[in-house]
Length: 420
Ligand code: SAJ
Image (cartoon, rainbow, N blue to C red; front, side):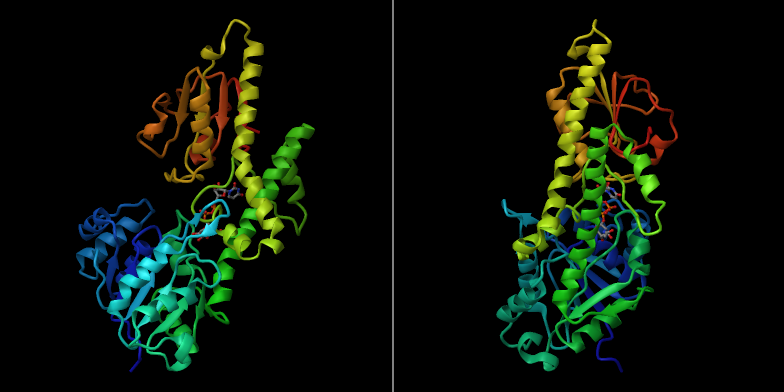
């Protein structure tokens, strides 16, 4: 009989990664206890509902809760495997990683640990975080042995297995994406592989250890950030040279080994704009390119705002009878990327907020994925797509709804290339 039958799994952190993962294990008939400090989230899940937006997650959670495989609690309880999926933001001017959520979660589960248990860190983490987690656990449980001192003989197995799913496609990518597993011992890696293979159809690849697994995840998101920065830099160069960057990229991408990404108003979300900093802070002297890419992408919203100010001046020059107060701006999209409703860490929100603060005329916002505007947009109106008569039109997010309507009349500031 297997040493790790995983009859009961605990997932700590029931957010965008933890909840789908918990639901996925539960959907395979494994008892899953989700732990979260947020009492509302716990109550919502226990009613079979969800507190986040992700396609198809609601029905999987609903079924898992009603069939009795998934339940949520604020207090950890014993299990055979623990998965930690809590946030890892950065802090301070140096963008240093903040591991406090991992430390709190580790100390919360430590009293529940028993010999044979497996603890997996899923949170995207700086190099060394899994070893720190193992140290916090060992510190809290001197009666148990851990791989950092006991190697293959350890009572508790520890591994890093970074999440890699794309928001909006989580339920599909959780199953089909390959997983990278970095155990602190071979036994840890083998146990983690066995655990994920309960639902992953992609390959579960065992890495040399947790550090390279941590770095692999940071590298994936940095790769994307650097490539988006290249596209964003091209967009500013093209504007300066009077060229259409979208045409330029289409032409260059006809080369068999060139695949340039798309420019936009900046990089949003909770991952790509954060994770590269973990590499920079671990090796600042060797990461000028990764750091510069972050700075290029972070500077893009300001560039769009300045372009919009110039567009307002242009609109005024064309209509001398008008003053700034008579100029209406229409903004298209607030979400951090296309076809989602997530406004957090969104460059489009940063642009819209700045324009709402500085512009004395009216502003209408079109965001088909939300029903009401956040409170900070009190001086603006949420408009339907067919009701956007304006002097200046600012396209920020390439939602599918925007692609099917004709180019509006007025001055256009197009951060996404929809109107070109
Ligand atoms: N963006 C562009 N141009 C592009 C592509 C994206 O401006 O050509 C912008 C988007 O509009 C958005 C931001 O970049 O503001 C990030 O969007 P995304 O779709 O590239 O990625 P995320 O943040 O939703 O998810 C990423 C994914 N990582 C990679 O694709 C390497 C996902 O697989 C990770 O699991 C996730 O980060 C994470 O949690 O780390």
